[in-house]
Image (cartoon, rainbow, N blue to C red; front, side, top):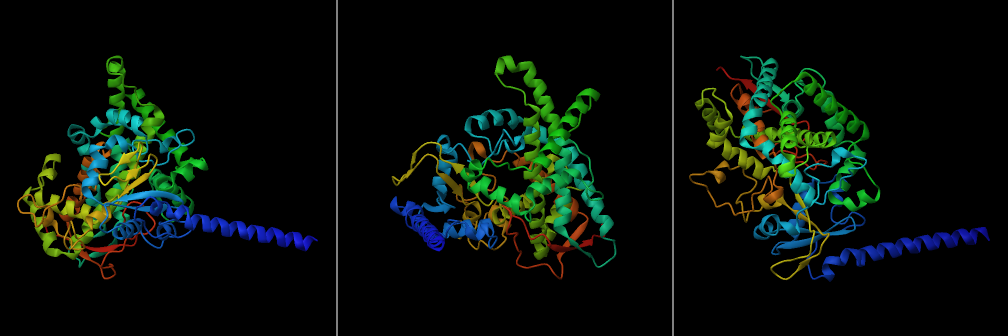
Length: 507
Protein backbone atom coordinates (compact mmCIF):
# COMPACT_ATOMS: atom_id res chain seq x y z
CA UNK A 1 0.00 0.00 0.00
CA UNK A 2 2.74 2.44 1.05
CA UNK A 3 4.88 1.54 -1.99
CA UNK A 4 1.98 2.16 -4.39
CA UNK A 5 1.29 5.52 -2.75
CA UNK A 6 4.97 6.50 -2.99
CA UNK A 7 5.06 5.48 -6.65
CA UNK A 8 1.93 7.50 -7.38
CA UNK A 9 3.49 10.62 -5.84
CA UNK A 10 6.66 10.10 -7.87
CA UNK A 11 4.77 9.67 -11.14
CA UNK A 12 2.60 12.71 -10.38
CA UNK A 13 5.68 14.79 -9.59
CA UNK A 14 7.41 13.74 -12.79
CA UNK A 15 4.32 14.54 -14.83
CA UNK A 16 4.12 17.99 -13.24
CA UNK A 17 7.81 18.66 -14.02
CA UNK A 18 7.39 17.47 -17.61
CA UNK A 19 4.23 19.56 -18.02
CA UNK A 20 6.05 22.60 -16.64
CA UNK A 21 9.00 22.08 -19.01
CA UNK A 22 6.70 21.65 -22.00
CA UNK A 23 4.70 24.74 -21.03
CA UNK A 24 7.80 26.90 -20.66
CA UNK A 25 9.56 25.67 -23.78
CA UNK A 26 6.56 25.65 -26.11
CA UNK A 27 4.48 28.52 -24.73
CA UNK A 28 6.53 30.90 -22.55
CA UNK A 29 9.58 30.71 -24.83
CA UNK A 30 7.48 31.23 -27.95
CA UNK A 31 6.02 34.58 -26.87
CA UNK A 32 7.91 36.63 -29.45
CA UNK A 33 7.31 34.10 -32.24
CA UNK A 34 3.58 34.23 -31.51
CA UNK A 35 3.76 38.02 -31.82
CA UNK A 36 5.55 37.84 -35.17
CA UNK A 37 9.03 38.85 -33.98
CA UNK A 38 12.39 37.13 -34.46
CA UNK A 39 13.73 35.80 -31.16
CA UNK A 40 17.04 34.66 -29.69
CA UNK A 41 17.91 31.10 -28.69
CA UNK A 42 16.76 29.96 -25.23
CA UNK A 43 17.55 27.34 -22.61
CA UNK A 44 15.55 26.39 -19.51
CA UNK A 45 15.45 28.07 -16.97
CA UNK A 46 17.79 30.92 -17.93
CA UNK A 47 16.02 32.05 -21.07
CA UNK A 48 18.64 33.65 -23.34
CA UNK A 49 21.10 34.56 -20.55
CA UNK A 50 22.37 31.17 -19.41
CA UNK A 51 25.99 31.66 -20.43
CA UNK A 52 26.23 34.85 -18.34
CA UNK A 53 24.35 33.51 -15.31
CA UNK A 54 26.61 30.44 -15.29
CA UNK A 55 29.74 32.64 -15.77
CA UNK A 56 30.59 31.00 -19.09
CA UNK A 57 30.61 34.31 -20.96
CA UNK A 58 30.73 38.03 -20.20
CA UNK A 59 27.45 39.92 -20.26
CA UNK A 60 28.56 41.94 -23.30
CA UNK A 61 29.29 38.70 -25.21
CA UNK A 62 25.82 37.31 -24.43
CA UNK A 63 24.05 40.46 -25.64
CA UNK A 64 26.35 40.67 -28.66
CA UNK A 65 25.26 37.15 -29.62
CA UNK A 66 21.60 38.15 -29.26
CA UNK A 67 22.34 41.26 -31.34
CA UNK A 68 23.92 39.17 -34.11
CA UNK A 69 21.02 36.69 -34.12
CA UNK A 70 18.77 39.62 -35.02
CA UNK A 71 20.83 40.62 -38.06
CA UNK A 72 18.66 42.51 -40.56
CA UNK A 73 15.97 43.35 -38.00
CA UNK A 74 15.59 46.59 -35.97
CA UNK A 75 14.68 44.63 -32.80
CA UNK A 76 14.97 41.05 -31.57
CA UNK A 77 13.11 39.36 -28.74
CA UNK A 78 14.87 37.37 -26.01
CA UNK A 79 14.03 35.99 -22.55
CA UNK A 80 15.39 37.04 -19.18
CA UNK A 81 14.71 33.78 -17.35
CA UNK A 82 10.95 33.52 -18.12
CA UNK A 83 10.30 37.18 -18.92
CA UNK A 84 10.11 38.37 -22.55
CA UNK A 85 12.38 41.35 -23.28
CA UNK A 86 13.75 43.18 -26.31
CA UNK A 87 17.13 44.16 -27.73
CA UNK A 88 17.06 47.23 -29.99
CA UNK A 89 19.56 47.11 -32.87
CA UNK A 90 18.77 50.17 -34.99
CA UNK A 91 20.47 53.51 -34.09
CA UNK A 92 17.56 55.62 -35.34
CA UNK A 93 15.14 53.58 -33.24
CA UNK A 94 17.47 54.07 -30.28
CA UNK A 95 17.21 57.81 -30.76
CA UNK A 96 13.44 57.48 -30.70
CA UNK A 97 13.52 55.48 -27.44
CA UNK A 98 16.18 57.50 -25.62
CA UNK A 99 15.21 61.01 -26.77
CA UNK A 100 12.19 61.56 -29.03
CA UNK A 101 9.82 59.26 -27.16
CA UNK A 102 11.53 59.32 -23.78
CA UNK A 103 8.17 59.59 -22.01
CA UNK A 104 7.38 56.02 -23.15
CA UNK A 105 10.74 54.70 -21.83
CA UNK A 106 11.43 57.04 -18.90
CA UNK A 107 12.47 54.33 -16.43
CA UNK A 108 15.31 51.84 -16.25
CA UNK A 109 13.19 49.26 -14.49
CA UNK A 110 16.11 48.39 -12.22
CA UNK A 111 15.07 46.95 -8.86
CA UNK A 112 15.46 48.99 -5.68
CA UNK A 113 13.88 48.68 -2.23
CA UNK A 114 13.85 52.00 -0.43
CA UNK A 115 12.08 50.61 2.66
CA UNK A 116 14.72 48.04 3.65
CA UNK A 117 17.67 49.22 1.55
CA UNK A 118 17.85 53.05 1.30
CA UNK A 119 21.23 52.96 -0.48
CA UNK A 120 19.61 51.16 -3.44
CA UNK A 121 17.26 54.09 -4.15
CA UNK A 122 19.27 56.67 -6.06
CA UNK A 123 19.43 58.55 -9.34
CA UNK A 124 20.21 55.41 -11.37
CA UNK A 125 17.35 53.27 -10.05
CA UNK A 126 14.65 55.86 -9.32
CA UNK A 127 11.44 55.72 -11.43
CA UNK A 128 10.35 58.45 -13.88
CA UNK A 129 8.86 61.28 -11.78
CA UNK A 130 11.24 60.71 -8.87
CA UNK A 131 14.18 60.63 -11.27
CA UNK A 132 13.11 63.89 -12.88
CA UNK A 133 12.87 65.66 -9.50
CA UNK A 134 16.11 64.12 -8.25
CA UNK A 135 18.01 64.98 -11.41
CA UNK A 136 16.69 68.56 -11.26
CA UNK A 137 18.23 68.84 -7.79
CA UNK A 138 21.52 67.07 -8.58
CA UNK A 139 22.36 68.21 -12.13
CA UNK A 140 23.97 71.50 -11.02
CA UNK A 141 26.37 69.41 -8.89
CA UNK A 142 28.09 68.14 -12.06
CA UNK A 143 28.28 71.35 -14.05
CA UNK A 144 31.60 72.65 -15.40
CA UNK A 145 31.76 75.16 -12.54
CA UNK A 146 31.32 72.44 -9.91
CA UNK A 147 33.91 70.29 -11.69
CA UNK A 148 36.42 73.15 -11.46
CA UNK A 149 35.52 73.37 -7.76
CA UNK A 150 36.38 69.67 -7.21
CA UNK A 151 39.31 69.53 -9.64
CA UNK A 152 41.92 70.45 -7.02
CA UNK A 153 40.87 67.45 -4.90
CA UNK A 154 41.02 65.15 -7.93
CA UNK A 155 44.45 66.47 -8.87
CA UNK A 156 45.81 65.74 -5.39
CA UNK A 157 44.73 62.10 -5.78
CA UNK A 158 46.39 61.75 -9.19
CA UNK A 159 49.59 63.26 -7.75
CA UNK A 160 49.56 60.54 -5.04
CA UNK A 161 49.16 57.95 -7.79
CA UNK A 162 52.32 59.23 -9.50
CA UNK A 163 54.23 59.31 -6.19
CA UNK A 164 53.16 55.76 -5.35
CA UNK A 165 54.34 54.46 -8.71
CA UNK A 166 57.67 56.28 -8.28
CA UNK A 167 58.16 54.33 -5.04
CA UNK A 168 57.59 51.05 -6.92
CA UNK A 169 59.55 51.75 -10.10
CA UNK A 170 63.19 52.81 -9.53
CA UNK A 171 64.94 55.06 -12.01
CA UNK A 172 67.63 53.57 -14.21
CA UNK A 173 66.23 50.06 -14.02
CA UNK A 174 64.87 47.98 -16.90
CA UNK A 175 61.38 48.41 -15.57
CA UNK A 176 59.03 46.89 -13.02
CA UNK A 177 56.14 44.54 -13.73
CA UNK A 178 53.03 45.51 -11.79
CA UNK A 179 49.53 44.14 -11.30
CA UNK A 180 48.04 47.23 -12.82
CA UNK A 181 44.39 46.54 -11.87
CA UNK A 182 45.22 46.69 -8.16
CA UNK A 183 46.89 50.08 -8.62
CA UNK A 184 44.15 51.62 -10.76
CA UNK A 185 41.51 50.25 -8.40
CA UNK A 186 43.21 51.99 -5.46
CA UNK A 187 43.45 55.20 -7.47
CA UNK A 188 39.77 54.97 -8.39
CA UNK A 189 38.82 54.52 -4.73
CA UNK A 190 41.08 57.37 -3.60
CA UNK A 191 39.75 59.88 -6.10
CA UNK A 192 36.11 58.87 -5.53
CA UNK A 193 36.36 58.76 -1.73
CA UNK A 194 38.04 62.17 -1.66
CA UNK A 195 35.70 63.86 -4.13
CA UNK A 196 32.50 62.13 -2.95
CA UNK A 197 32.61 62.39 0.84
CA UNK A 198 35.94 64.06 1.61
CA UNK A 199 37.76 61.01 2.97
CA UNK A 200 41.42 61.80 2.35
CA UNK A 201 42.58 58.22 2.67
CA UNK A 202 45.64 56.96 0.81
CA UNK A 203 44.61 53.37 0.02
CA UNK A 204 47.98 52.82 -1.71
CA UNK A 205 49.55 52.64 1.74
CA UNK A 206 46.86 51.43 4.17
CA UNK A 207 43.53 49.70 4.31
CA UNK A 208 40.45 51.74 3.56
CA UNK A 209 37.15 50.74 5.24
CA UNK A 210 35.25 52.46 2.46
CA UNK A 211 37.09 50.30 -0.08
CA UNK A 212 36.05 47.19 1.86
CA UNK A 213 32.42 48.35 1.80
CA UNK A 214 32.51 49.02 -1.96
CA UNK A 215 34.14 45.63 -2.62
CA UNK A 216 31.41 43.81 -0.70
CA UNK A 217 28.87 45.26 -3.14
CA UNK A 218 30.85 44.74 -6.37
CA UNK A 219 32.93 41.61 -5.58
CA UNK A 220 32.55 39.32 -8.64
CA UNK A 221 33.53 36.25 -6.57
CA UNK A 222 30.71 36.71 -4.03
CA UNK A 223 28.00 34.34 -5.31
CA UNK A 224 25.16 35.85 -3.28
CA UNK A 225 26.01 39.42 -4.27
CA UNK A 226 26.40 38.29 -7.87
CA UNK A 227 22.88 36.84 -7.72
CA UNK A 228 21.56 40.13 -6.29
CA UNK A 229 23.20 41.99 -9.18
CA UNK A 230 21.72 39.69 -11.83
CA UNK A 231 18.20 39.76 -10.41
CA UNK A 232 18.21 43.52 -9.77
CA UNK A 233 19.21 44.32 -13.34
CA UNK A 234 17.83 41.58 -15.58
CA UNK A 235 14.94 40.10 -13.52
CA UNK A 236 13.64 42.82 -11.18
CA UNK A 237 10.27 41.03 -10.85
CA UNK A 238 11.95 38.06 -9.17
CA UNK A 239 13.93 40.40 -6.88
CA UNK A 240 10.71 42.19 -5.93
CA UNK A 241 8.91 38.89 -5.26
CA UNK A 242 11.57 37.93 -2.72
CA UNK A 243 11.64 41.47 -1.20
CA UNK A 244 15.39 41.36 -1.75
CA UNK A 245 17.90 43.96 -0.65
CA UNK A 246 20.71 44.87 -3.03
CA UNK A 247 23.19 46.37 -0.53
CA UNK A 248 24.40 44.05 2.25
CA UNK A 249 22.94 45.32 5.54
CA UNK A 250 26.33 45.71 7.22
CA UNK A 251 27.53 47.91 4.35
CA UNK A 252 24.36 50.01 4.45
CA UNK A 253 24.54 50.57 8.22
CA UNK A 254 28.25 51.43 8.06
CA UNK A 255 27.92 53.91 5.22
CA UNK A 256 24.81 55.76 6.44
CA UNK A 257 26.39 56.11 9.88
CA UNK A 258 29.60 57.44 8.29
CA UNK A 259 27.70 60.02 6.23
CA UNK A 260 25.76 61.09 9.33
CA UNK A 261 29.01 61.69 11.21
CA UNK A 262 30.57 63.59 8.28
CA UNK A 263 27.55 65.89 7.92
CA UNK A 264 27.32 66.59 11.66
CA UNK A 265 31.06 67.21 11.96
CA UNK A 266 31.11 69.69 9.08
CA UNK A 267 28.11 71.57 10.39
CA UNK A 268 29.34 71.74 14.00
CA UNK A 269 32.93 72.68 13.08
CA UNK A 270 32.17 74.86 10.02
CA UNK A 271 34.35 72.59 7.85
CA UNK A 272 34.22 73.22 4.10
CA UNK A 273 35.79 70.85 1.57
CA UNK A 274 35.94 70.85 -2.22
CA UNK A 275 33.97 67.64 -2.75
CA UNK A 276 30.57 66.28 -3.82
CA UNK A 277 29.30 66.08 -0.24
CA UNK A 278 29.98 69.80 0.22
CA UNK A 279 28.15 70.51 -3.03
CA UNK A 280 25.11 68.65 -1.63
CA UNK A 281 25.33 70.47 1.72
CA UNK A 282 25.55 73.83 -0.05
CA UNK A 283 22.65 72.78 -2.25
CA UNK A 284 20.53 71.95 0.80
CA UNK A 285 21.24 75.39 2.25
CA UNK A 286 20.26 77.00 -1.04
CA UNK A 287 17.01 74.95 -1.19
CA UNK A 288 16.14 75.82 2.41
CA UNK A 289 16.37 79.51 1.56
CA UNK A 290 14.32 79.28 -1.63
CA UNK A 291 12.01 76.24 -1.24
CA UNK A 292 8.93 78.41 -0.90
CA UNK A 293 9.59 79.89 -4.35
CA UNK A 294 10.84 76.88 -6.36
CA UNK A 295 9.17 73.97 -4.56
CA UNK A 296 12.34 71.88 -4.17
CA UNK A 297 12.83 69.81 -1.02
CA UNK A 298 16.25 69.48 0.65
CA UNK A 299 17.91 66.07 0.49
CA UNK A 300 17.45 63.83 3.54
CA UNK A 301 20.37 62.01 5.17
CA UNK A 302 19.41 58.76 3.40
CA UNK A 303 19.22 60.57 0.06
CA UNK A 304 22.66 62.16 0.51
CA UNK A 305 24.02 58.75 1.51
CA UNK A 306 22.46 56.95 -1.47
CA UNK A 307 23.62 59.54 -4.04
CA UNK A 308 27.20 59.62 -2.75
CA UNK A 309 27.28 55.82 -2.46
CA UNK A 310 26.16 55.53 -6.10
CA UNK A 311 28.94 58.00 -6.96
CA UNK A 312 31.45 55.72 -5.19
CA UNK A 313 30.18 52.43 -6.65
CA UNK A 314 29.80 53.66 -10.23
CA UNK A 315 32.84 55.91 -10.19
CA UNK A 316 35.64 53.85 -8.70
CA UNK A 317 35.14 50.76 -10.85
CA UNK A 318 34.65 52.61 -14.14
CA UNK A 319 37.64 54.88 -13.42
CA UNK A 320 39.83 51.89 -12.62
CA UNK A 321 38.74 49.81 -15.62
CA UNK A 322 39.01 52.71 -18.10
CA UNK A 323 42.53 53.52 -16.94
CA UNK A 324 43.52 49.85 -17.31
CA UNK A 325 42.15 49.64 -20.84
CA UNK A 326 43.97 52.83 -21.86
CA UNK A 327 47.29 51.69 -20.39
CA UNK A 328 46.97 48.30 -22.09
CA UNK A 329 46.28 49.78 -25.54
CA UNK A 330 49.11 52.29 -25.15
CA UNK A 331 51.47 49.52 -24.05
CA UNK A 332 50.82 47.45 -27.18
CA UNK A 333 51.12 50.48 -29.50
CA UNK A 334 54.30 52.40 -28.66
CA UNK A 335 53.90 54.84 -31.53
CA UNK A 336 50.51 55.92 -30.22
CA UNK A 337 51.90 56.19 -26.70
CA UNK A 338 54.78 58.40 -27.84
CA UNK A 339 52.40 60.71 -29.73
CA UNK A 340 50.23 61.10 -26.63
CA UNK A 341 53.28 61.65 -24.40
CA UNK A 342 54.45 64.44 -26.72
CA UNK A 343 51.03 66.09 -26.46
CA UNK A 344 51.11 65.87 -22.65
CA UNK A 345 54.62 67.37 -22.61
CA UNK A 346 53.45 70.25 -24.79
CA UNK A 347 51.37 71.73 -21.93
CA UNK A 348 54.55 71.91 -19.80
CA UNK A 349 52.95 70.69 -16.57
CA UNK A 350 50.10 73.23 -16.70
CA UNK A 351 47.31 70.73 -15.95
CA UNK A 352 43.98 72.41 -15.36
CA UNK A 353 40.37 71.39 -15.97
CA UNK A 354 40.46 73.40 -19.21
CA UNK A 355 43.82 71.90 -20.25
CA UNK A 356 42.65 68.29 -20.19
CA UNK A 357 39.61 69.21 -22.29
CA UNK A 358 41.92 70.76 -24.93
CA UNK A 359 44.23 67.75 -25.37
CA UNK A 360 42.90 66.69 -28.77
CA UNK A 361 44.79 63.43 -29.30
CA UNK A 362 44.06 62.31 -25.73
CA UNK A 363 40.38 62.92 -26.41
CA UNK A 364 40.56 60.78 -29.56
CA UNK A 365 42.24 57.94 -27.65
CA UNK A 366 39.75 58.27 -24.80
CA UNK A 367 36.76 58.05 -27.14
CA UNK A 368 38.20 55.05 -28.94
CA UNK A 369 38.69 53.35 -25.56
CA UNK A 370 35.02 54.06 -24.75
CA UNK A 371 34.03 52.58 -28.11
CA UNK A 372 36.01 49.39 -27.72
CA UNK A 373 35.49 49.01 -23.96
CA UNK A 374 32.26 50.80 -22.91
CA UNK A 375 31.95 50.73 -19.11
CA UNK A 376 28.24 49.91 -19.39
CA UNK A 377 28.04 47.30 -22.20
CA UNK A 378 24.23 47.41 -22.12
CA UNK A 379 21.75 50.12 -21.15
CA UNK A 380 18.35 49.28 -19.68
CA UNK A 381 15.00 50.96 -20.29
CA UNK A 382 11.48 49.99 -19.26
CA UNK A 383 8.49 50.67 -21.50
CA UNK A 384 6.08 52.60 -19.26
CA UNK A 385 3.32 52.99 -21.84
CA UNK A 386 2.48 51.14 -25.05
CA UNK A 387 4.69 52.21 -27.95
CA UNK A 388 4.28 51.37 -31.64
CA UNK A 389 7.44 50.96 -33.74
CA UNK A 390 7.62 52.45 -37.26
CA UNK A 391 7.01 48.95 -38.69
CA UNK A 392 3.77 48.68 -36.68
CA UNK A 393 5.06 46.34 -33.96
CA UNK A 394 3.65 47.12 -30.50
CA UNK A 395 6.00 47.26 -27.50
CA UNK A 396 3.70 46.70 -24.55
CA UNK A 397 3.89 48.56 -21.25
CA UNK A 398 6.12 46.70 -18.79
CA UNK A 399 8.52 45.32 -21.44
CA UNK A 400 12.21 45.61 -20.61
CA UNK A 401 14.23 47.07 -23.49
CA UNK A 402 17.98 46.52 -23.65
CA UNK A 403 20.32 48.74 -25.64
CA UNK A 404 23.43 46.73 -26.63
CA UNK A 405 26.07 49.49 -26.47
CA UNK A 406 29.02 47.11 -26.82
CA UNK A 407 27.50 45.22 -29.74
CA UNK A 408 26.62 48.43 -31.61
CA UNK A 409 30.11 49.84 -31.11
CA UNK A 410 31.71 46.59 -32.34
CA UNK A 411 29.44 46.27 -35.38
CA UNK A 412 31.58 46.57 -38.59
CA UNK A 413 28.57 48.19 -40.25
CA UNK A 414 29.20 51.27 -38.08
CA UNK A 415 32.88 50.83 -37.15
CA UNK A 416 35.04 49.13 -39.83
CA UNK A 417 37.68 46.80 -38.35
CA UNK A 418 36.00 47.05 -34.94
CA UNK A 419 38.67 45.05 -33.08
CA UNK A 420 41.37 47.51 -34.16
CA UNK A 421 42.09 50.34 -31.73
CA UNK A 422 41.91 53.34 -34.07
CA UNK A 423 41.78 56.80 -32.39
CA UNK A 424 41.54 58.52 -35.79
CA UNK A 425 37.88 57.46 -35.93
CA UNK A 426 37.28 60.38 -33.59
CA UNK A 427 39.51 62.98 -35.21
CA UNK A 428 37.74 66.34 -35.41
CA UNK A 429 39.80 67.33 -38.44
CA UNK A 430 39.89 64.20 -40.62
CA UNK A 431 37.97 61.20 -39.20
CA UNK A 432 38.63 57.97 -41.09
CA UNK A 433 34.89 57.24 -41.26
CA UNK A 434 31.59 58.82 -40.31
CA UNK A 435 30.17 58.11 -36.85
CA UNK A 436 26.50 57.25 -37.32
CA UNK A 437 24.39 59.11 -34.71
CA UNK A 438 23.47 56.83 -31.78
CA UNK A 439 25.90 54.11 -32.80
CA UNK A 440 28.36 55.51 -30.22
CA UNK A 441 26.62 56.03 -26.86
CA UNK A 442 29.03 55.04 -24.04
CA UNK A 443 27.36 57.45 -21.59
CA UNK A 444 23.82 56.93 -22.86
CA UNK A 445 21.71 59.72 -24.35
CA UNK A 446 18.60 61.67 -23.49
CA UNK A 447 17.35 62.68 -20.02
CA UNK A 448 18.94 59.60 -18.43
CA UNK A 449 22.45 60.01 -19.84
CA UNK A 450 25.28 59.56 -17.29
CA UNK A 451 25.24 62.61 -15.03
CA UNK A 452 28.82 61.92 -13.91
CA UNK A 453 30.26 62.02 -17.44
CA UNK A 454 32.46 65.09 -16.85
CA UNK A 455 33.80 63.70 -13.60
CA UNK A 456 34.60 60.31 -15.09
CA UNK A 457 36.47 61.79 -18.04
CA UNK A 458 38.49 64.17 -15.88
CA UNK A 459 39.49 61.56 -13.26
CA UNK A 460 40.69 59.03 -15.86
CA UNK A 461 42.59 61.60 -17.93
CA UNK A 462 44.29 63.02 -14.83
CA UNK A 463 45.44 59.55 -13.78
CA UNK A 464 46.73 58.82 -17.28
CA UNK A 465 48.62 62.13 -17.45
CA UNK A 466 50.41 61.49 -14.14
CA UNK A 467 51.41 57.98 -15.24
CA UNK A 468 52.61 58.76 -18.77
CA UNK A 469 54.48 61.91 -17.75
CA UNK A 470 56.69 59.78 -15.46
CA UNK A 471 56.68 56.31 -17.01
CA UNK A 472 56.81 54.45 -20.29
CA UNK A 473 54.27 51.60 -20.31
CA UNK A 474 55.12 48.24 -21.94
CA UNK A 475 53.54 44.78 -22.07
CA UNK A 476 54.96 42.46 -19.42
CA UNK A 477 56.13 38.95 -20.26
CA UNK A 478 52.84 37.51 -18.94
CA UNK A 479 50.47 40.17 -20.31
CA UNK A 480 47.65 38.41 -22.14
CA UNK A 481 47.35 39.66 -25.74
CA UNK A 482 44.58 39.97 -26.81
CA UNK A 483 43.22 41.28 -23.54
CA UNK A 484 40.92 39.04 -21.50
CA UNK A 485 37.72 40.45 -19.97
CA UNK A 486 36.34 39.58 -16.52
CA UNK A 487 33.29 37.32 -16.99
CA UNK A 488 31.34 37.97 -13.78
CA UNK A 489 30.87 41.75 -13.71
CA UNK A 490 28.26 44.05 -15.25
CA UNK A 491 30.82 46.82 -15.72
CA UNK A 492 33.34 45.93 -18.44
CA UNK A 493 36.58 45.05 -16.64
CA UNK A 494 39.95 43.57 -17.67
CA UNK A 495 40.93 40.32 -15.98
CA UNK A 496 42.03 41.03 -12.42
CA UNK A 497 45.63 39.78 -12.81
CA UNK A 498 46.46 42.09 -15.74
CA UNK A 499 50.16 42.98 -15.60
CA UNK A 500 52.09 45.71 -17.40
CA UNK A 501 55.70 46.86 -17.20
CA UNK A 502 56.49 50.46 -16.21
CA UNK A 503 59.86 52.04 -17.01
CA UNK A 504 60.78 55.36 -15.36
CA UNK A 505 61.41 58.18 -17.84
CA UNK A 506 64.64 60.19 -17.67
CA UNK A 507 62.78 63.51 -17.49
